[in-house]
Image (cartoon, rainbow, N blue to C red; front, side, top):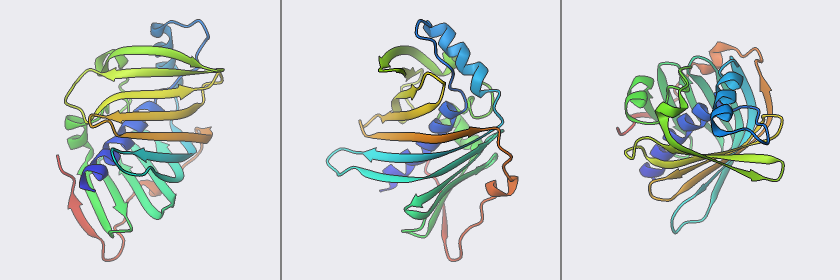
Length: 219
């Protein structure tokens, strides 16, 4: 359970790195131009709102699906509000990151600096996009009118081994798939994307629920 919590923790950050940068893709675009489009489109967005469905597939266990609403606001702020399971929330205020799980009434805390140093490629989250710094190989593959982009991280020490994301012809992010080192997969489906909406900064200020235990995330 602790391992899955840590994987979810990292995946949210990897998700934000992808959501912060996806592009409009041309049918004949080569990888370099695709990555440039990535930088140009979402790096310019200051906020994002969308709905998500998150499916976790692990070794020798049934799939688990959760869903909710995601809010992002640069720099480094995000809020995942779950409607299923109700009450679960993942928040970053730009300095600290919190994961609250109502089933255990527990909050897992880490600083954004700690996470940047040891985990996902937060250069994206911090607005310092450099695909070739964070990933060592890329591949494009079509799926109908959409395009999958497969990216392999530069470091073998990260908890995930591959990130795959699917974009539509109008540049909407439709899916994000993160494959961990143990071959478990977290697959996000996104919908109802809206860019540059006014979002109240107070939504990114985490408040510990009454009686909840706060623990430090394992590094």
